[in-house]
Image (cartoon, rainbow over the protein chains, first blue to last red):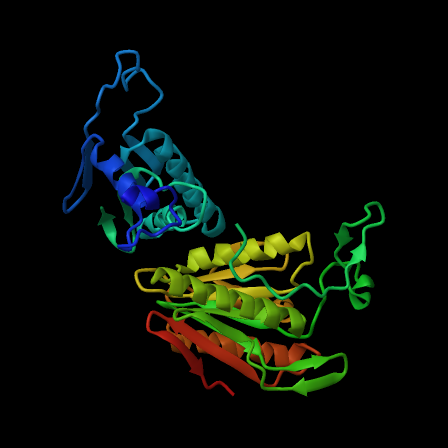
Length: 150
Length: 236
């Protein structure tokens, strides 16, 4: 029954659900675990790397990891979900951060960056033709407004 | 990325560029400043500012006029752009009000969208960026002093001109007054001025203008900004 209402993100099911969004959440649930812990003087992130193939290079030799990313000097994140989708959002996050730095010559507040990414993702659950991102993030960072944040 | 609220500048008498069919060229300097050979429209207004212990004092003359005529003598040229930041503008009244309100509204939008306030340094760079962007399109002929004393932040004064120059300063002035008062401020300003001391220095500056400057500037609007907010000083 739900098959009829899951073809597009712009279609509600009769129960008022967006199936595409729920499938995206399932994609995240099936991904490698990420953990974040906030301490008094720091935030710690950890990610479980699943080795999908012996052909894929280890993190020490490869350009970067598929789980942990630096957004700016004061913000980083771990990713759970589709790596290709995550790349788009990481680029968007880095761009937002640098645009803010360019305009205000100050580091972007962490919550503001996260809000930008959330708004970016939300657009894909409302406007037509594109599926939502199958990615979940844990962002951590420091700014002068709220200190260490997870 | 452009600032969210764009100024109402659609109706501009833009001249078509001589070598391009549909690109326009910003109007050149006004006829009255062509004689000076400068791109800046000189007006008779002035502003003086100085930094004290936890506060910034800004003073701007209250005259509004053109050529030999005075329209009014109680114009407030010091705009609050946020709870803890004020901006004094010098230049043709049109540009000053348009630009001043543009900055005010964008600062308010930032506050509403993000539930935090921009620091004075951030605000200064934002304003400078807008002046710089407009410079090659159709400059805002606005010179300004920005003073701010947000919480957890040292009181700071920024000097900006219409070209997008930005400098953090201890004291500053714009307009013809700068020719007269900068030396006085250099002599009398010191670190950690109290409010009374700062007002005394300001009185010395204004007395100098009364003695030596041809244009009479009888009324001034004087404001102090500190971490509590903006206060108007009854100076006259």
